[in-house]
Structure formats: C-alpha cells, structure tokens
Length: 341
Image 1 (cartoon, rainbow, N blue to C red):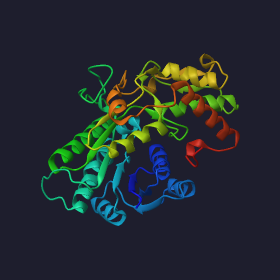
Image 2 (image 1 turned 90 degrees about the vertical axis):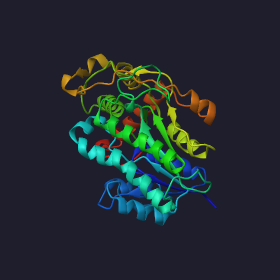
Image 3 (image 1 turned 90 degrees about the horizontal axis):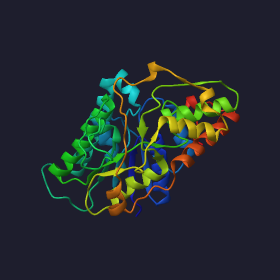
Image 4 (image 1 turned 135 degrees about the vertical axis):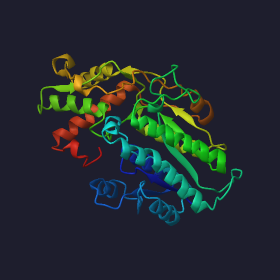
C-alpha cells in the first residue's frame, strides 16, 4: 500500500513543493487546511488535484486529533507557521501560539492517536513526524558555519517560537520514543515564495520595473548575508529524514552565503537593469534586531542522507525574475497570491 502523508502548511511554498514531491514518490497525500474561507485552498484544489484536504487548525488541539484519526498517516510534516519574520514582532503572541504551541498540539495529537501513554522505545510502524525548524533559531551566531550542535540565540519572536518547537520535538523523541525529527532549514526560495519576503520582493521589484509598472524599489539592510537555496531541493531532504533508520535532526543549506546586495545585483542583471538607478534604501525597513550572517554546514545531511542541492544561487534568482516577469506580463497580481507559476 502507498504511504500516507499529512502536511500542515499545504497552501504555502514548502507545502506545495513537498506535496508534489511525495506524489511523485507514490504517496497518498493529505493537506491540513483551516475551516474558514481561504482563497489559497481553491488554489490547492486546482493545482494539486491529487491531494486530499482535511480540516484542522494548529490553534485547536481537538481538530488536530480528529484530522490525524481521519487520515491515519504514516508521516506527518508540520510546515504550518506564521513564517514572515517581521510580522512576528507585530503579532508576537499569535506567532507563539501557531509557530510554537502548534508544534506541541500536533505532537500531542500524534501521541494520543498512537496510544502512547508512557516512555517506550521507538517502535516500527508508528507515525513519523517532521518539524520544520529554522536557521533563524541561530540568530546572533556563535560560530560560522552553523551545524546541528551550534547553540541557538534567536533574534525575533519567530526564531524563539521555532526554537521552542525544535526542543519540543527533541523532547517527545527522547521522552516517548517517537520518530520525531527536525530539519533546520536555511533560507530557501522559489517563484512560489510569498511576495512579502525579501527575495520575492526584490525579484518582483525588478520585474515590475522591467515591464514599466514602477520605477524604484525600497529596501532596508543590504549587508545582511544568508545561505539561500531552492525550496524544491529542500523538500527532498524532509522526506529523506523520515526514511532514515534512526530519528535525528539535520541542518539543510548550501554552505554558501550571499548578501542582500548580491541578491539585488543578480535580480536586476537577470532583468537587464542597473540596480543602482532604481533601489532606494529605507531605514524604516530594518529589523528591530538584525541577524547579520547565517551559513549552513550541511555535511551531516550530505553524508547520512545523501542530500545535495541542485540549483545554484544565480540560477535560482534568474528563475524567480523570469517567472515574475511572465506573471506580470500576463496581467497577474502576485500580491494576491492567486496562482503558482
């Protein structure tokens, strides 16, 4: 029988790529969606027609238990979160509830539905759990590059909430013998990235200038450096973690960093534009506490999982600019998140 997977965050960038990847691997894929009207749900139904949907909410324990009982998954991928870092300062409590406490509720749903009442050794046939951890947990880094043993010092409510979920996943693994793992993913982008994220903001900005919709792009700190990769590559690592014999946490990234300034240069070059003629620095767009440098050491994933990224930085940015240019030329409004390329 086909393995069955339940994905929270099915309407987001990672959820869509993961669903497609699991379908290609022969999985029976289910996505968790909230009960109220959500325009993204119709997009999922249209573009992921082989994915079945089940109602549930990371804010509601009972709904998660019902969803797990109904689906009966072999694997659960918890990708649902409030993931836009600047918003986590504006909605810190909600970020804690969804991004942090949501992990606890999902782990509890799996524990209850699996009949786990006390500590026991990891058993075969149990539900395997993947938690989407984040490089933002490292924050003010103590060493570069960052690996699975690097201490956390998060610099945003989002990073703090992710660290809480990460440690909970470890705790349930060690306390109950659950097959529970965390993927500490560094920044991963694609043409499906939300328009509010800096990578997509930049590629959309370059595309809008190219097609004549605007003349400038306002940005904050251009000196921050990140390890940027392609989301389609990173979802492969998620599945590989749940196929391992032993549950362990892994850092996933490219091991190479680029500044926001380099990202801007790559995007505007892909659009055939001179970025210095169009980019305006806006101090109001700086974070309250900046994370200056994040760089992954993905050696463990490479050695133990056989995982390697396939799309380089310049190709990724060119892919996004090309996609955004075609979307805008076709009259689409990417800010409304109405379609995937």
